View (tube, rainbow, N blue to C red):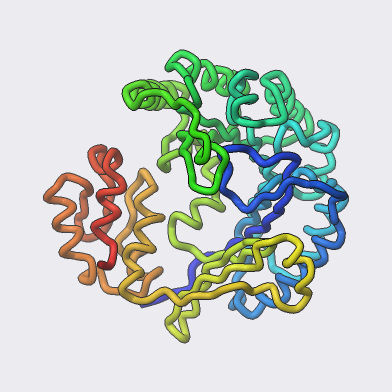
Length: 381
């Protein structure tokens, strides 16, 4: 039976000081002044058109992503959060995350963000090597990265994620492990450690840099994961590691096929209607200028997920998790019987890609290495 899942809110801020050569997100170099209040007022109008999709559910998490949300002042973000609270019910334990880049934050701003109600910071470090940061097109250096983490702690943030990349151009195993050791010395509660990939529509795609050999990246991955264990960080998702009790609630809702409202230029939503037995995806106007000009029409596209697409849609999220996934969750979030995917589960078990006892499924170590192959089994041909 299809049931209403938890509901999160994602807010997209599309501007950056500079577009990084590896970035394929909806981000745009800031050329003129930042339209802070105008954009926030549009976000509120955008949300008001989505209010009928809440179905009396509280918001369990808010994630401000980009782009570079930390270009916006603490006063503006406080105004936004106050206005959101007038329109939405916040859960008692709501997680409110702000993405911030060391090169765009005056460190005294951290106090303002904390006072505004933000209780989790995600810092886009990427590397502590100034040389590697230049190659990645970042506007901060290694020292600024360290100072940003320390300043966030001084401001009172106790839940801090560091975004770190590995497999950087010409990176050695030793260099990659040095980045991790510096990160561990700063004692963040969460680290997102992911491999650089070259995506279409990026400058790196047009002019590919020299990436490490697969053997080098494989060794770095294995040795890095071992150090995470030694440092007592739980590897709970493909690229997510956390101290006890500090899993990212917002991302967990994505991975467990929860619902989310997306507001802002290029934001998208996933919305369940259990009365109509439908799940749909919604995309907002992508270009910031077009978004700001809409006022009453932010919707760019919407699509209902077909029943035959649901197993893949569920699994592309759930199989990223390094934990048991209750089979009941599949039935609740998709409205499908487990028998719909039983032959695929049986085949995947035979190939050693996952285990399933009827109550829960879990990706094996072998399946983690061949995630894409496992996922492809659930695709609707």
